[in-house]
Image (cartoon, rainbow, N blue to C red; front, side):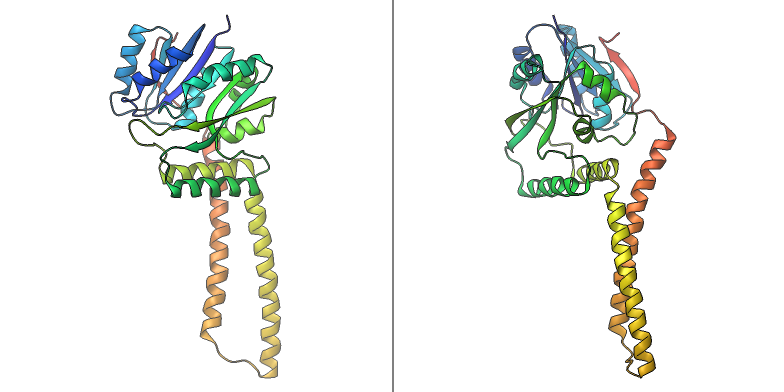
Length: 305
């Protein structure tokens, strides 16, 4: 039978682990493996996973040496997956295991990649909704690769897609963009995400902002081009204003003005700082890539050869 590999990064999810495993056993028929990637949890997540592995050999675990981040943990799990069908999902029960049979059937029907799209998420705040909407709108304006709004990191794909994903060696990973970029025959499944049963989301505002910057700089040079166009426009305006000021001086029409000087300095200075900040993001990405550090370090393997 075709082996199904389910990859689940977890970080401080000790309260959700057993309930998640019960759901997985209920909905995963046939030959399957569940690979938990313990991303440097500081609670009893690893101990709870060990208990589960002792009772069910279909469950496995990679324990990373520290917290490397959700995207890196996913890559670690994918690198150790043995299945011909692979599913990636979160460990907070907001990605319903009940969808797994449907996703697997879509792969059997000839699709290479099955993505899931959230219709809504229970108990999500209005601020987070607005921020998510703004993020997807912004990134699709500046990116050369369209990234569907509300598409979750809950995906199923075959070994062909897995081989393609593992070819990516970049350190600043934005897997949602990479899955959109690679192409292949894709199917979409809509679902309603339930509220978290235990714990809090690990994606704080700072982490969401960092992920947004990764997505922006990984898939487009348009921000640099926009900065160039804005800088060119301001330079032309400044040159024209300089000519006007010179003519006014010789005509004797000049009047000393503090406000106009301050406004001009603040406007030009702010624009320059914005452009320098954009350059800094790209340079930082280049610096990270140039060091060629590993994406993750595995401290312990449980039930994995």
